[in-house]
Length: 133
Image (cartoon, rainbow, N blue to C red):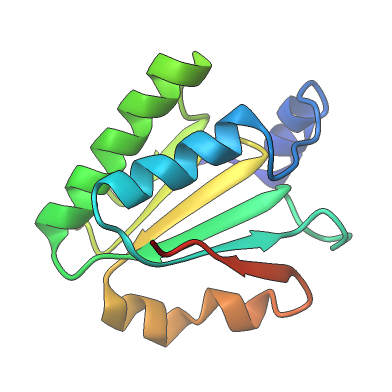
């Protein structure tokens, strides 16, 4: 399991990102390509306790679509940015899948799971941007 300390050590080697970074744009585009819904990015750069620069949260109505979004996202980031995820979780059930690229952490969720955990509310002090088509 990834610890915050090990992630912080890895993150110290990575430059801070902005919304114009290739990684951020590739993540958003890959989600849109597979029809991810209600795509929101949370800019966490001004939140002192945040462990990433951005959270990207989206949803899909089925495990099959969650899987398709995740696979496309990982393929596109590897192809266009040359990066593999630092860590992933949720591949067993596909209700809430997390793909961690250190400075960008992607949450692909089933609508009920998203409604229950309300990540956007938990990080309400972050600037939120909607990325739906």
